[in-house]
Structures are given as structure tokens and as C-alpha cells.
Length: 361
Image 1 (cartoon, rainbow, N blue to C red):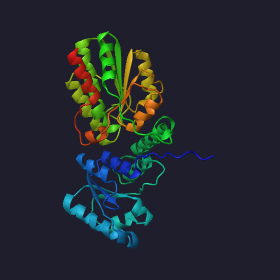
Image 2: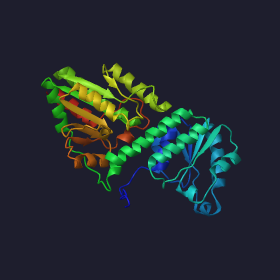
Image 3: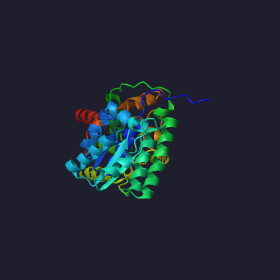
Image 4: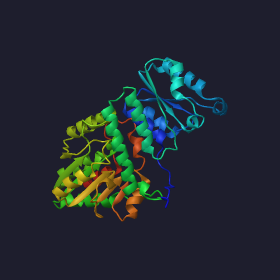
């Protein structure tokens, strides 16, 4: 019996490869394909400090081969940017016509570390694109093999989590419009005012921590004014992950510290969102909070309660939660675009709503 296909749009393996190369601090990414391939992801990536260019394949190149456009692009990259590291990422077009990207890199002879990532959009999961980028990066000496193996295991775990409890567990999910944040923020404020214990758990995926972390600041501000107690937990181990991901932790933890906000438990790194759920749940259960707020990949925690407040950045994930009667779920859409290139905490709408309520109490 065949497994029903997921027919709502899913993340692209090519884009996953590009984000992973960014996390490895590659200087320039060359997309070997049409100029418009992955356009919506390419532009924001440049805000994060990595150059993204394209070989801009034309119709004739699909017939006669794309080697010459790629070689010209690589030479232009050397002349314009003089990068230390360059990754050439394959696309559907280059894969279909069978371009030998590695051979074109050798022919270009631009020096430095230049390597190919064999990738296309028809891979079985978006994480496969990231895994191929990791393996290519390890082979090129960009990251240690041990870190490549660790990352690969985490990405496979993320794929399985989505198949079990996330967006890939449903054949189709219609994007949900977020309920107002007013109700859930009133509940947080009232719990603190009544002297109750509010737990805030952030299980963020990489740079999204820059936005979700604002909830710690807002709840701490509310506690100072209203009373009650808090328990803060996050997956921000600054010693785990690719170089850029570790810097995210350093930046956020430093800013929280300057605001007088202390994370009571750090469980795992920002790339371990798929595997820390059980550990986070155990820590949370031991605290016995009166109210729990979970941000990010909420469904990684196995013991979610219907009264928990869930905050996600994905409209379809929000639909997934609401369909399961987690009626205190709210969405922070467009968060990913807001944190691209961020170096400090970005205000969260739910956090700002809580601040406004507290000011009026």
C-alpha cells in the first residue's frame, strides 16, 4: 500500500543546501541554473553576509551544456569578490542535462577552496539538500567529518519528526490565519499577577531564536511588575553547531544577560530542535508550572497539553496545531524574513502584546 503524498508545498532541497553553506561560513554560493531559481531565498541570504550568484542558464545551455556559463561565472566571482571559499550548488536544470560541475570547477581554475554540491529539487526531503552540502563541505575541509556526521543525524531526526507530528504528517494543510495574541497574553499576565509559575520554553530552529527569544524578555518584564515566578528553558548551547549557529547563541545570550534575563536550563543547541523534546519535557514536568508557553518547534515536546500556549512561525504548522485542538496556538508569520542577517533580538508580536497589556495593568 502506497503512502499518501504530501501535496502542500514543502521546503526545497536546493534552498536547504544554500542555508547550510551559509551556516558553514562559505563566502560565495553559485547556483548553477536559471537566473530565477530559488530567487526568493537567494536575496535574503545576502543580508546574512553570504554572496549568492547564478550561472543564469539559458535555453540554449540546456541543449549544449552549461559548463561555459558556469566557468565564466566562477571567473567573475574571483574577480569581483576574491573569496576564500566558493560552493557551486546544482539545480534541477543542471542535474537534468547532466552537467559535470566538478569538471567545470577544475577547468575554471580560480584557486581557493571551490567545491560542488550535487543537488536538485526532486530529492525525497529538503534535508537531503542540507546533508549533501555538509558532505561536500567536509570533503573540502570546510567542516570536520565528525560535525558532518552529527549534523546528518540531526537532519534525519528532523525529517522523521515532521513525518510523525509535523507538517509532513498531513497530506494537505491549509495555511491558518493566526488568532489574536490578546487572549494568550492576558492569560500570561493574569497568571503572574495571581502569583503563579509561568514556564517559557524555546525550541527554536537556528536563526529564528533571534525573534522567539524576545518572549523571555517580555515575560521577565511582566514578572518584575506583576509578581509570580518563571522558569526559562532554551536550546541555546553555544558549544554546539556550525560556526554561524554558535554565534547566534553567543549574541542572544549576551543580550539576554544585559537585560537581566537568565535562562534557567539550556538543553541542546539551536540545530538540535528535533532531538531535545524528551529532555525538555522532563525538565518541564519537574518544574510543575501553572502555565506553559512553548515557542518554535513545539511538537518536538511529547507532552504538550491543550491549555499550553504554542507560538510558531509557520502558517501551516499553526493549522496543524489548531486542527489538534491546541486552541491557544498563535502564529508569528514572516519571522524568517525578519531575522535574516539579524545580530540581535528582534521584537516578537506576542511579546509586544504582553508588554502593552502589562503597561495597562
